[in-house]
Amino acid sequence: MFCINCGIELSDGQKICPICQTRVYHPDLKKSEALPTYPRKAFKSEEINIRGLLFVITLLHLIPIIFAIILDYNLNNAFDWTGYVVGAVLLIYVCAVLPMWFKRANPVIFTPCAFFVAIVYLWYINFSVEGDWFWSFAFPVSLGAAVITTALVTLLRYVKKHRLYIVGGAFILTGVLIVFIEFFLHLTFDFKHDGFIWSLYPLVFLAVIGIGLIVIEIVKPFKESLRKIFFL
Image 1 (cartoon, rainbow, N blue to C red):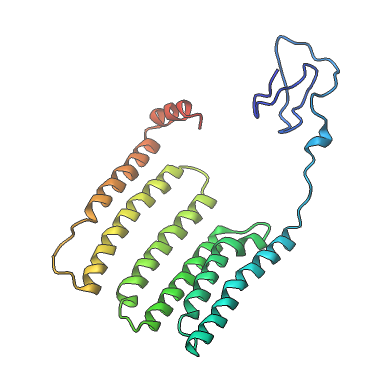
Image 2: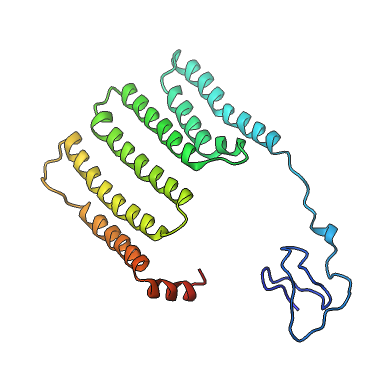
Protein backbone atom coordinates (compact mmCIF):
# COMPACT_ATOMS: atom_id res chain seq x y z
CA MET A 1 0.00 0.00 0.00
CA PHE A 2 1.28 3.43 -0.90
CA CYS A 3 0.47 7.00 0.17
CA ILE A 4 -1.73 8.75 -2.38
CA ASN A 5 0.01 12.07 -1.74
CA CYS A 6 3.77 11.41 -1.58
CA GLY A 7 3.89 7.82 -2.87
CA ILE A 8 5.86 6.31 0.00
CA GLU A 9 5.25 2.63 0.82
CA LEU A 10 3.05 2.05 3.89
CA SER A 11 2.16 -0.92 6.01
CA ASP A 12 -1.43 -2.16 5.94
CA GLY A 13 -2.17 -0.99 9.47
CA GLN A 14 -0.99 2.59 9.21
CA LYS A 15 -3.61 5.30 9.48
CA ILE A 16 -1.47 8.38 8.72
CA CYS A 17 1.49 8.77 6.37
CA PRO A 18 4.62 9.44 8.49
CA ILE A 19 6.00 11.91 5.94
CA CYS A 20 3.15 14.10 4.69
CA GLN A 21 0.58 13.30 7.42
CA THR A 22 -2.05 12.32 4.85
CA ARG A 23 -4.77 10.03 6.20
CA VAL A 24 -4.49 6.52 4.78
CA TYR A 25 -7.57 4.72 3.50
CA HIS A 26 -7.89 1.50 1.54
CA PRO A 27 -11.45 0.28 0.88
CA ASP A 28 -10.44 -3.40 0.63
CA LEU A 29 -8.46 -3.56 3.86
CA LYS A 30 -9.75 -3.38 7.41
CA LYS A 31 -7.86 -1.06 9.70
CA SER A 32 -5.74 -2.86 12.22
CA GLU A 33 -3.02 -1.90 14.62
CA ALA A 34 0.41 -2.42 13.13
CA LEU A 35 3.90 -1.08 13.42
CA PRO A 36 4.64 1.74 11.00
CA THR A 37 6.91 0.96 8.09
CA TYR A 38 9.15 3.92 8.91
CA PRO A 39 9.74 5.15 12.47
CA ARG A 40 8.57 8.69 13.11
CA LYS A 41 11.93 9.75 14.55
CA ALA A 42 13.60 9.02 11.22
CA PHE A 43 11.82 12.02 9.68
CA LYS A 44 12.51 14.54 12.39
CA SER A 45 14.58 17.22 10.73
CA GLU A 46 17.26 19.12 12.57
CA GLU A 47 16.52 22.74 13.28
CA ILE A 48 18.68 25.24 11.44
CA ASN A 49 19.68 28.58 12.88
CA ILE A 50 18.31 30.78 10.10
CA ARG A 51 19.57 34.00 11.67
CA GLY A 52 23.09 32.64 11.93
CA LEU A 53 23.01 31.44 8.33
CA LEU A 54 21.80 34.84 7.11
CA PHE A 55 24.55 36.53 9.11
CA VAL A 56 27.15 34.36 7.37
CA ILE A 57 25.59 35.13 3.95
CA THR A 58 25.74 38.84 4.79
CA LEU A 59 29.42 38.58 5.63
CA LEU A 60 30.04 36.76 2.35
CA HIS A 61 28.44 39.67 0.50
CA LEU A 62 30.94 42.01 2.14
CA ILE A 63 33.94 40.08 0.80
CA PRO A 64 33.70 41.26 -2.85
CA ILE A 65 33.08 44.82 -1.66
CA ILE A 66 36.20 44.85 0.53
CA PHE A 67 38.24 43.13 -2.18
CA ALA A 68 37.08 45.68 -4.79
CA ILE A 69 37.95 48.62 -2.53
CA ILE A 70 41.48 47.33 -1.86
CA LEU A 71 42.18 46.33 -5.46
CA ASP A 72 40.77 49.50 -6.99
CA TYR A 73 42.74 51.77 -4.68
CA ASN A 74 45.99 49.85 -5.14
CA LEU A 75 45.73 49.91 -8.91
CA ASN A 76 44.36 53.42 -9.48
CA ASN A 77 45.01 55.27 -6.21
CA ALA A 78 41.30 56.10 -6.37
CA PHE A 79 37.91 54.44 -6.39
CA ASP A 80 37.11 54.30 -10.10
CA TRP A 81 35.00 51.17 -10.42
CA THR A 82 34.31 50.20 -6.79
CA GLY A 83 30.83 51.71 -6.97
CA TYR A 84 29.80 49.24 -9.69
CA VAL A 85 30.71 46.30 -7.46
CA VAL A 86 29.03 47.82 -4.40
CA GLY A 87 25.86 48.55 -6.34
CA ALA A 88 25.69 45.08 -7.87
CA VAL A 89 26.25 43.33 -4.53
CA LEU A 90 23.69 45.56 -2.82
CA LEU A 91 21.13 44.85 -5.54
CA ILE A 92 21.64 41.09 -5.20
CA TYR A 93 21.39 41.33 -1.42
CA VAL A 94 18.16 43.34 -1.46
CA CYS A 95 16.53 41.01 -3.99
CA ALA A 96 17.64 37.64 -2.63
CA VAL A 97 18.76 37.92 1.00
CA LEU A 98 16.99 40.83 2.68
CA PRO A 99 13.47 39.30 2.48
CA MET A 100 14.78 36.17 4.24
CA TRP A 101 15.41 38.17 7.43
CA PHE A 102 11.63 38.44 7.90
CA LYS A 103 9.43 35.50 8.81
CA ARG A 104 6.61 36.73 6.60
CA ALA A 105 8.25 38.88 3.99
CA ASN A 106 5.61 40.78 2.06
CA PRO A 107 6.49 40.80 -1.67
CA VAL A 108 4.30 43.86 -2.11
CA ILE A 109 6.88 45.80 -0.09
CA PHE A 110 10.10 44.16 -1.25
CA THR A 111 9.30 44.21 -4.98
CA PRO A 112 9.25 48.02 -5.31
CA CYS A 113 12.25 48.22 -2.95
CA ALA A 114 14.25 46.00 -5.30
CA PHE A 115 13.25 48.10 -8.31
CA PHE A 116 14.17 51.27 -6.40
CA VAL A 117 17.68 49.96 -5.73
CA ALA A 118 18.00 48.92 -9.39
CA ILE A 119 16.94 52.38 -10.60
CA VAL A 120 19.40 54.09 -8.25
CA TYR A 121 22.15 51.75 -9.46
CA LEU A 122 21.38 52.60 -13.10
CA TRP A 123 21.45 56.30 -12.22
CA TYR A 124 24.87 55.84 -10.62
CA ILE A 125 26.22 54.09 -13.72
CA ASN A 126 24.86 56.85 -15.95
CA PHE A 127 26.40 59.47 -13.66
CA SER A 128 29.78 57.69 -13.54
CA VAL A 129 30.12 57.37 -17.32
CA GLU A 130 28.65 60.85 -17.88
CA GLY A 131 25.92 59.41 -20.02
CA ASP A 132 22.61 60.90 -21.07
CA TRP A 133 20.49 57.76 -21.28
CA PHE A 134 19.10 57.48 -17.76
CA TRP A 135 16.16 59.91 -17.78
CA SER A 136 15.18 59.25 -21.39
CA PHE A 137 15.54 55.47 -21.37
CA ALA A 138 16.53 53.62 -18.16
CA PHE A 139 14.25 55.50 -15.78
CA PRO A 140 10.94 55.28 -17.72
CA VAL A 141 11.54 51.65 -18.71
CA SER A 142 12.50 50.62 -15.16
CA LEU A 143 9.58 52.56 -13.70
CA GLY A 144 7.15 50.89 -16.10
CA ALA A 145 8.50 47.44 -15.23
CA ALA A 146 8.27 48.30 -11.52
CA VAL A 147 4.65 49.42 -11.79
CA ILE A 148 3.56 46.34 -13.77
CA THR A 149 5.42 43.88 -11.53
CA THR A 150 4.29 45.51 -8.28
CA ALA A 151 0.68 45.65 -9.45
CA LEU A 152 0.82 41.98 -10.49
CA VAL A 153 2.32 40.86 -7.17
CA THR A 154 -0.16 42.96 -5.18
CA LEU A 155 -3.23 41.72 -7.01
CA LEU A 156 -2.13 38.08 -6.91
CA ARG A 157 -1.52 38.37 -3.18
CA TYR A 158 -4.76 40.06 -2.16
CA VAL A 159 -7.25 39.05 -4.87
CA LYS A 160 -8.22 35.41 -4.52
CA LYS A 161 -10.63 35.11 -7.43
CA HIS A 162 -10.44 35.60 -11.21
CA ARG A 163 -6.65 35.57 -11.25
CA LEU A 164 -6.55 34.80 -14.96
CA TYR A 165 -7.77 38.36 -15.54
CA ILE A 166 -4.76 39.63 -13.61
CA VAL A 167 -2.20 37.41 -15.33
CA GLY A 168 -3.71 38.07 -18.76
CA GLY A 169 -3.62 41.80 -18.19
CA ALA A 170 0.01 41.54 -17.07
CA PHE A 171 0.92 39.79 -20.33
CA ILE A 172 -0.74 42.52 -22.38
CA LEU A 173 0.88 45.33 -20.39
CA THR A 174 4.28 43.66 -20.75
CA GLY A 175 3.84 43.68 -24.51
CA VAL A 176 2.95 47.37 -24.39
CA LEU A 177 6.04 48.02 -22.26
CA ILE A 178 8.24 46.36 -24.89
CA VAL A 179 6.82 48.76 -27.50
CA PHE A 180 7.70 51.67 -25.21
CA ILE A 181 11.22 50.24 -24.84
CA GLU A 182 11.74 50.48 -28.58
CA PHE A 183 10.26 53.99 -28.55
CA PHE A 184 12.65 55.16 -25.83
CA LEU A 185 15.55 53.49 -27.67
CA HIS A 186 14.75 55.61 -30.73
CA LEU A 187 14.34 58.70 -28.56
CA THR A 188 17.59 58.24 -26.66
CA PHE A 189 20.03 56.80 -29.17
CA ASP A 190 18.59 58.38 -32.32
CA PHE A 191 18.33 55.29 -34.50
CA LYS A 192 18.17 55.99 -38.21
CA HIS A 193 15.10 53.88 -39.08
CA ASP A 194 11.68 55.22 -38.17
CA GLY A 195 8.71 53.40 -36.70
CA PHE A 196 8.47 50.24 -34.70
CA ILE A 197 10.46 47.32 -36.10
CA TRP A 198 10.83 44.45 -33.63
CA SER A 199 8.63 45.33 -30.65
CA LEU A 200 5.35 44.62 -32.45
CA TYR A 201 6.13 40.88 -32.62
CA PRO A 202 6.38 40.31 -28.85
CA LEU A 203 3.41 42.66 -28.39
CA VAL A 204 1.21 40.47 -30.61
CA PHE A 205 2.51 37.26 -29.01
CA LEU A 206 1.96 38.46 -25.43
CA ALA A 207 -1.39 40.03 -26.31
CA VAL A 208 -2.62 36.73 -27.76
CA ILE A 209 -1.61 34.90 -24.58
CA GLY A 210 -3.18 37.57 -22.38
CA ILE A 211 -6.45 37.66 -24.30
CA GLY A 212 -6.53 33.86 -24.28
CA LEU A 213 -6.24 33.78 -20.50
CA ILE A 214 -8.99 36.35 -20.16
CA VAL A 215 -11.25 34.36 -22.49
CA ILE A 216 -10.62 31.22 -20.43
CA GLU A 217 -11.65 33.13 -17.29
CA ILE A 218 -14.83 34.37 -18.99
CA VAL A 219 -15.90 31.01 -20.44
CA LYS A 220 -16.53 29.04 -17.25
CA PRO A 221 -17.15 25.58 -18.86
CA PHE A 222 -13.87 25.85 -20.78
CA LYS A 223 -12.06 26.88 -17.61
CA GLU A 224 -13.48 23.92 -15.67
CA SER A 225 -12.49 21.53 -18.46
CA LEU A 226 -8.91 22.76 -18.40
CA ARG A 227 -8.89 22.55 -14.60
CA LYS A 228 -9.86 18.87 -14.78
CA ILE A 229 -7.42 18.09 -17.57
CA PHE A 230 -4.39 19.66 -15.83
CA PHE A 231 -5.52 18.80 -12.25
CA LEU A 232 -5.59 22.47 -11.21
